[in-house]
Amino acid sequence: MRRVWTLPVVLMVVGGAAAAAPAAGGNPFEAAVTLGVFVLLAVAMSPLAFPRSIGAVEAQRRSAVDGRPVVFWRPGCAFCMRLRMRLGYRARRMYWVDIWRDGEGAALVRAANGGDETVPTVLVAGRAYTNPDPARVRELATPAGRREGDNRP
Image 1 (tube, rainbow, N blue to C red):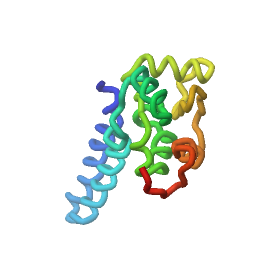
Image 2: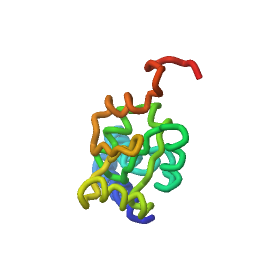
Image 3: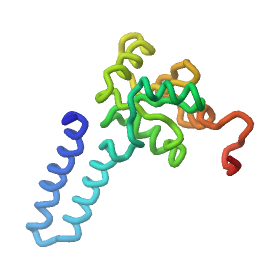
Image 4: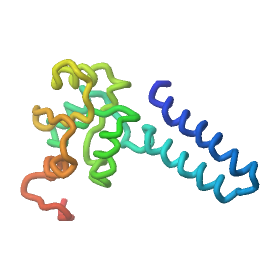
């Protein structure tokens, strides 16, 4: 649990230290901007930027029912962040499994990647895609018979 918050906490501490110098020098605007940048980075690298994680077994069960992709990720992973940001609102349509919190998810990722915990790994219909292009994940997440942007249920 603590490991997922280490990087965000370090970013907040470094941001506070970096903002202290301009604040002490009488430049509160620069201090506020510096601190703001570090706060945004900390939030982006925290679990808060991702949809709520569920266990791998539950994610696979749900995916088998509705066909939605399962995304295995870990906090602090730049490639996971890239995928999350490029998916935008569509990320909420997928099941996210934090491999640092779920041992079964980590084992599935290792099995799919020759023993490595390479993330993001996306599982769709039993097939694993390692660090896929976000456009490809959007295609995989769009149900058959629907086009992107179609608002029909």
